[in-house]
View: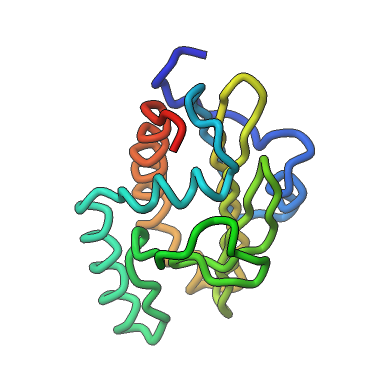
Length: 172
């Protein structure tokens, strides 16, 4: 895998994300070589999201304003994390805009649910310094499908931009 290249692919076999694929309305997975990222999956997620580009947070602010008009919840900004170190997080804790669903050295599963859709995001480390981000969405009704129309193309741009930040990581 070329260093710094974001490659689309399948969810890693045996990952927690792959177990959530059946019946998904939307899913994708992107992989990147990040040989300097010898930290646990949650530390990697925290580090990268703490450096969320301003344009992503502006898109989140727009999203929060628009969905607020429809009575949906304001998630805040992607990079709005507390100062808590990765070692203090437990399953069920809130990690920025997501709740922690699963936690291991090599994979972290974060998600959010409401009556319209369920979103799960996995950051999974593989041997030889590869990192993958898998997103799985299950929609429950027409509002969930409507929500996904603008979100899907923006999501792909955001995930690729965030993943590229892992390519330059050295031990954090």
